[in-house]
Image (cartoon, rainbow over all chains, first blue to last red; front, side, top):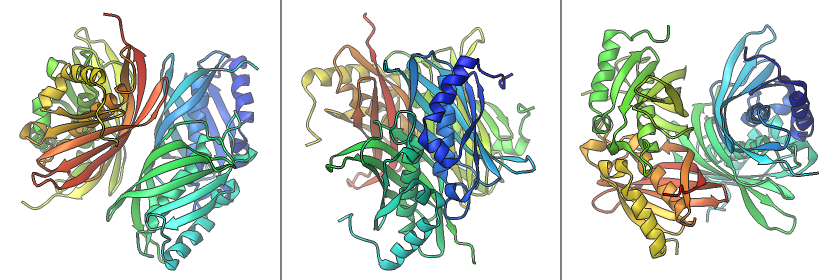
Length: 148
Length: 148
Length: 148
Length: 148
């Protein structure tokens, strides 16, 4: 049920915004699911995103988690709205190993001004086995989009 | 006083570890100061590290803050020790604008097992003016270095 | 399934420890469920636990959440172990209203040294309706119990 | 400099609001300093605020830290404003021992909607020696006071 896709206009808004995040393409991240209040972002493991032991760096893990939460919130607002991250907290539960990481942002509580999301990041092996490598909580603020 | 450099052996350990973090070089980050319990990392603003509005992405801001805190802790331990991030929390206080960002990790409390660091990230303009753009708190765990 | 009770020895250890927490009895909190990796604590709303608007104070909300998480972790360890809170983060999602609050601590990841719990607090009305009023994440450390 | 008192009207507003927090008086906490952007709250150690080992419970430590931060923010706003805690994160750095605890909330960044505070709690012995026992970071939201 929670895997239902968002409507086309919402998907397009998320895709367009994601396309403007230079960091996401530089890291090699891509949108894997856009549902109402829920967005998945995938990051292939490669040397450009590692820490000193060869696992994915907490900063890269956090970056896709933060974007997943931000876009999960954005799916719930109209096209005049933007969301900005106020803060987040993330626990790194296990070495971020695997063929790729999948970050899942899901809205826990959406409000007029503030929205709170849960963040999960899974390490996924090429055989499909998954392990939770990070878990977090994020606060976002809705702002009106500047008129172009 | 807090700006004193660490001893050469400590500096070398931090530099070697930083050099193995594929993400740091991919982002274009570099070590700017290595002192006892305090490390600075600089990240030039460029399109590869942006979010959708052209500011530095919270994920890149967090990545240098996380590394700065981790290396600040590492300066206090012997060469048999490594540190891993347990968790961190970061508030994004202002748009991460400027010519470059400077992340400062400083040890608040060092313990045998756990260390807590404060994280600051400043946006620095080419004229030298600075603004605090993010502030956080991080918990790290010391682990014994695996024998090669 | 997750509501299964813990074994009697574990329950007794949790109850004995809870009984020694002067704050819990002073607030009027009580243990409502002790399961493996999951503990519920109930706090009746009364003037002694309020903030300035008459809702339950974030500090009281946090106190039962923190204890629920700590005891959830404790259920998974042997009798030689104690757990201490390293840190937690909590979002106050809605005014903590209701006849009583119910805090639920559940273990997300148990490790040899560190354990991470999720914390939820619900406001429960006398008619049984529930609302999530706070959500958090907690890190705990296992320590050996001092020999008496 | 930071220890300067707030003006009398601000002090009165903080004292009145604090006086309505049932939890603070039930715990035995009192306001110790009200300055612009900075408030101190003292909590005497006594059996009613302990955890299972006889130290002050993390929940009580957090409660005074949360109130100190909230009132620090309130000192910066006009009388039509209230502040509510959005979230906070706190590290318990050492056992909360001492004759009393002193929580210090200080504003790191005040905004029109959101304010971020730093939270410190010190354990103070009867001989005046102090130790940092907890450190945190808090996000607050300003709301308009309801008309009576």
